[in-house]
Image (cartoon, rainbow, N blue to C red; front, side):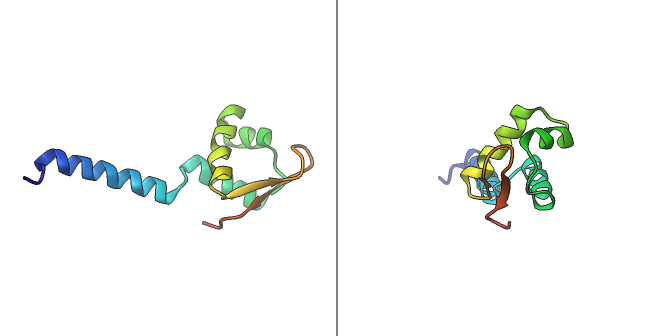
Length: 88
C-alpha cells in the first residue's frame, strides 16, 4: 500500500515545511529587510518602535536573518550598520 490518507497528509505537511524553509523568511523578517534596505544604520530598538513589536521579538527575528546570511551587522551596536548579503 502507498499509505493512503496519512501519507497524503504527511506529504502535504512536509511540502509546506520545505516551502517555508525555502522561502526562508516570515513577514516580520521581510519587513525588517525592507527597513534595513532603506535605513542601514537603524538600531534594533528603532526597528521595534517602527514595527510596534518588543525588542526581544525584533532580536528573535534578526537572528535567523543573520544565521542564514541574509544580513550582517558591521561595526558596533550604536555606530554600526546593517549590510544585506542575500538580496532575496
